[in-house]
Image (cartoon, rainbow, N blue to C red):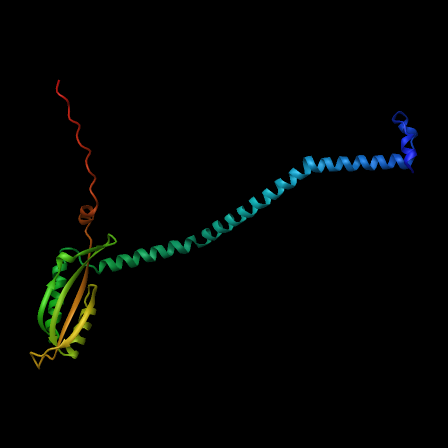
Length: 218
């Protein structure tokens, strides 16, 4: 085929055109049709497919997360029950507002029972501090004289009390006034009491009442 073969072609006599030319034209038309189909339809479908694949990956991740939560939910519930049980047991060891005085007396008796000479025993009610809306910390300033053996017995006796008591700010110095009581122990005993519901209500910020509207006189 050469250029003259194409110049002499008459569209009206397409049926009589040479077979190679017919084949070439058919191939060109098919190519244009396929390209048009890809450009106007297939390309959009590929874009939509890519979006769907991204969305599918997100949903798979979400499904795996939910599946993991569903699998661990019974264990989490079991742990929650254990935590609540432990919390109740710990709260049961805390005295209420009425029982605090008894605990203070027990600590004071523990000082004397272990051979210490009590020089200061001062519950600092003004320094009571509420913690997390569950319990209240009450510090007790304590000063006593004795020896290391008596101090050790005192600490063991405090640890054995049926209520929770912690010891802080421990200071031991030499007692120059009394050879029989060679050391002076200064310590802060921290006791914890249960926060009463009435106290919780008192500690909550009270809502201010809106000012009453004054009615005008005519």
